[in-house]
Length: 81
Image (cartoon, rainbow, N blue to C red):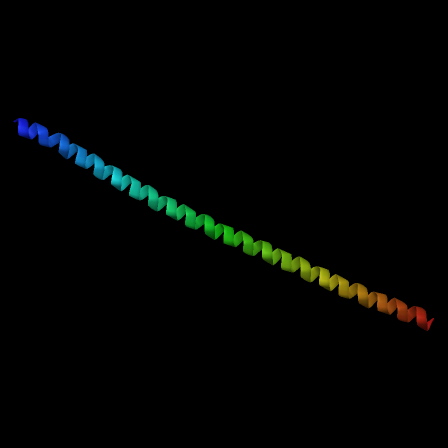
């Protein structure tokens, strides 16, 4: 009977160890999924910022071209008057 009593705590310790290994594996997998999600979000945010910056630059370029054309027209009107 003492042999059975000695084996059972070892068996219980083995199960506890297996449960900890499984729990830590799941925790690690979850952490990797969170890291991947955060990295994808960061890439998305950076892409959106780049697009907004490009749109802003395009707007400035269009406005600058419009002002140049208006300035040329004003000069032509003044010279013609």
